Length: 407
Image 1 (cartoon, rainbow, N blue to C red):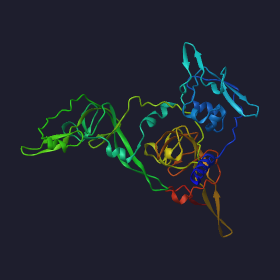
Image 2 (image 1 turned 45 degrees about the horizontal axis):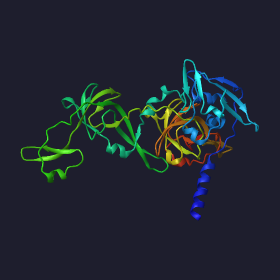
Image 3 (image 1 turned 135 degrees about the horizontal axis):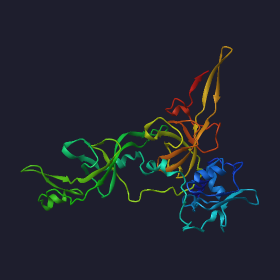
Image 4 (image 1 turned 90 degrees about the horizontal axis):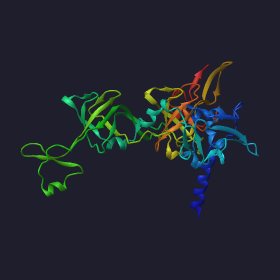
């Protein structure tokens, strides 16, 4: 009986560990607003809230609706009201239920069913579509099993658009990204390898193939020794050996140089994932760090992507809003010949929305940044500006965190 009770207590502690913020509406927020083409959910939530992560509370959502929310369309009129307890609520004019769930809004000249997701995007897609579709940190296991370019035309090692190239271990037909590994991504706190950072070099597409190459006669005993997809290759007049048959590709796009040895990552059909989720505050306490800045630079500003060392196993999901903080630092002063330290508390420098997650990592786009975010900066629950975030600075390889400055 003790084990279920302990499990329940742990679950309760997770549920209540995230700091709770009072739901307040911005001064001057409109009582009525007509949704326009080009509006984003982030922009509308920022129009009404100082903390856009409180959108589900303002809209009256439950947890399941955060992941599969109802639709908001251009032309709809949003109405701000207050309930008997004085709590603000935002809904659609004419809706029978909170937020207009299950409603069909008819707008000339077409009709829209509001049962399957947001018609307006959560964020402007143009600025992050490439980040969303193609992560630049890949699990080590995935790279080890990935197809690899083994040959191209004229024994060249560098390839161009239109070249025919060949890859080993390629399975499905379709489009593939080409990439190479630049190094491991290591958690600065636990030293755990979270994945491999990669650089995409281009895109290839499969060519029609009959799995060609001469087949060599084999005995039943020899056939039993072959692995999946293998056949025998005649090495010389006396010797034959197991071999696989390379799959032909054509290079369709080049981002940088495509080299022999580059790995391939399959692009699933219909992988252009829409942002069908609501911005919301994390349901757990978040203690993460910025461990990468997209495109390999050391600092990032608004609309740039950073990678956090926490993911799905830590309770982060798509749409979660975190704040990025500069850790506290100490200013060293000399007063009357004596050394004195003055601690400057942690400062919130940006909000960030998680838009892609894996088990151990999250991709987040910086929003409302007032200064540059750096590798090693802290990411936590919103609303902790100028507080002690209790992140041990000695565990971060970041000269700005917990540093001492002479004054």
